Length: 90
Image 1 (tube, one colour):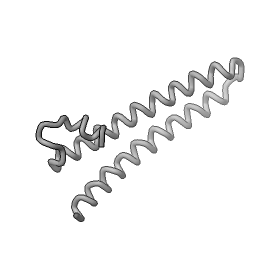
Image 2 (image 1 turned 180 degrees about the horizontal axis):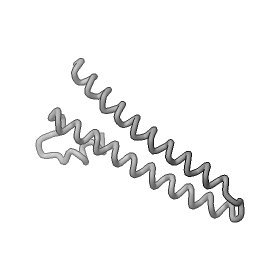
Image 3 (image 1 turned 180 degrees about the vertical axis):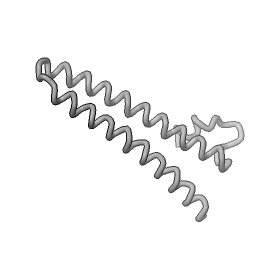
Image 4 (image 1 turned 135 degrees about the horizontal axis):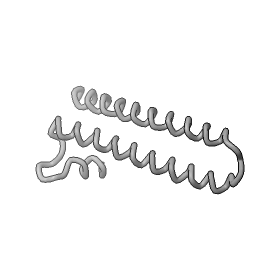
């Protein structure tokens, strides 16, 4: 049980780092965008929102891949299951 907890904690910390790095980049880009001229503020807000959501979805995909690698390494995924799909649904 301690081994499973340790592996899960290590993978979680790795995913926290991925999420923190991506969020830091998003915040910096958002601040630099906000510092520019404020014409068409609503349109720019839509663009920034779509870009932010897209980047966060990509980060989530990376986090799922990290989990799928962990499942593959420790043999936690069922034999006939795709590890990425198994990680995504779990």
